Length: 122
Image (cartoon, rainbow, N blue to C red; front, top):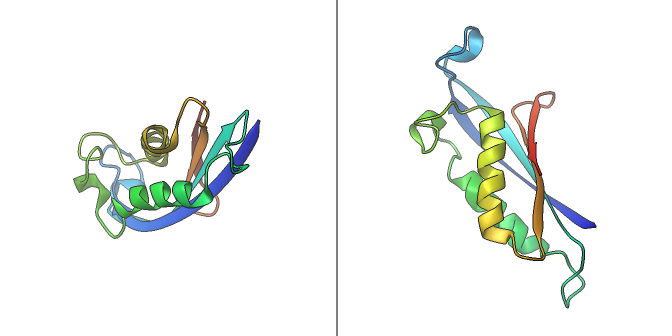
């Protein structure tokens, strides 16, 4: 399988209101998001998908949350705004935006910090 990867980032605040520790308090992160997509065959231009298409989709998703309190933005007004939930949300949204019969979203990784990362994958 051929695979490509793109990254984007955003800065946003959140709080985990049911968390027993310090993450219960309002705090922010410089979030980093990585998306990996793949295909068994390349398109007529020799690509899985044009990097610009993947980067645009990823950037639009990040822009939804950039410099906001994510607890106030759907779906995080209903579910905890964890890195795990961000990874699943971005995965599902990328399936809609770039997934085709040929192109699969393989994985999405979301970093809260340089050392803390969550992944959702097939």
